[in-house]
Image 1 (tube, rainbow, N blue to C red):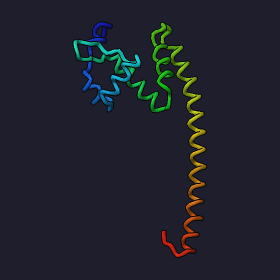
Image 2: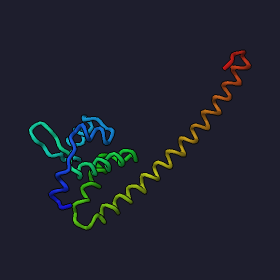
Image 3: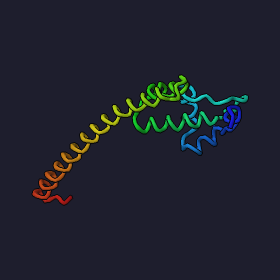
Image 4: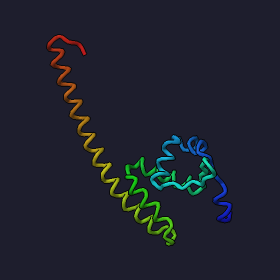
Length: 134
């Protein structure tokens, strides 16, 4: 597929919403933040394959907890001309940092769950002593 054909395969905003499970408002928001660059024909937007790939990466980045600014920086590295080596390296670096944060959050949450269960057990025992069934 040549570059011209690559950009002629487009989806409308409603098709993008259906394909990616997002709202039109979300797409317009990402466009306003200059993360997506749909083609425009009067009031209509047409999303190229490149936009579709970018949205897939945006949604994945958001799922992993990356900020929009981090996502923008990663997407902008695509075009620097080194066959995405810099983009992959930076993505790897940010992903390592994010994984560390997520694992720490998981550990804190696991600890909080244990503490809450202990509190509920103690509360349940106290209520039973007082004649209240839980």
